[in-house]
Length: 116
Image: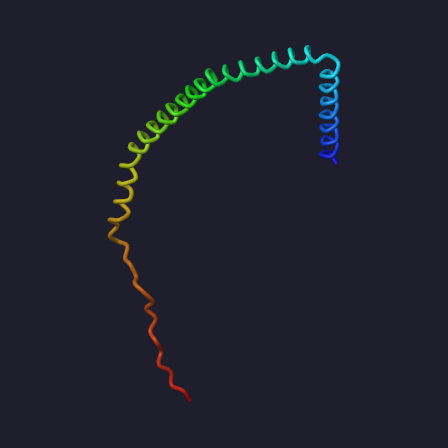
């Protein structure tokens, strides 16, 4: 329901704008052409400004994000290196427990039953 209302509103807006453009072309084509060329030139100018400055800013932001990630990665690797010896010591202590034994397999003996 909501999409239908927006669709009808959108198409109505498009049709009215096309009628307005057609009316301005028929009444005074020179004024329309002047306005259209000014809008086109402003659009092209904005496009080139975005291409020149927008991409350089995006590249700078990308570099900043990359450097932050690299710095965080270094911090994490330094923290991991500090904790590794503690883990190795505890695992060695667990492996050298002499009071533990390993039981292999199932040690159930088969009972010989006499059939009656």
